[in-house]
Length: 214
Image: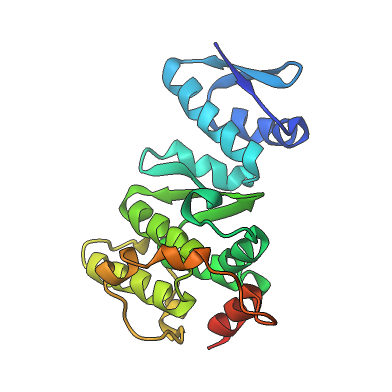
């Protein structure tokens, strides 16, 4: 049996029926934690799923972790920028009307949740490196169009080996991106620019919106 500390017991209680219906375990509730009883493998899977739900993922998305190809990862925003205005950094990740986040999800078949200054993502192992790099690059100030082009390039090299495309949508072909971006160019983004202060009257949120609407 495993004990799992949780922050949002309300979310966990709501998700438990769906989890117990899909995985043979028994989940009990304590004060600030839940217990998971089942086989060693099932306990391991359910702990990951509970962590995802507790962070903010819908239980249907968290249950993707039943598949051994899917991984739960967390990225700390503060670890990849020295900027103080983290609200604008989070806004770049979300985009106007959630467009940036949705585009990354559609291009990679991933699910992304942003909570405080952490980014949680559930992605299959084939797309994990690309989606992680895309998120880090946006945090560091890369243009949205270039990041989307990078992901499309990664998909182009993968599609011939992947008939399922993990739910990629044809609509992503219509994205208006600013040309291709080489892996080296994306990874080599100069994050030292994050130290500079924002120009007066030109917050990054406005810049993100312009990038997304191009």
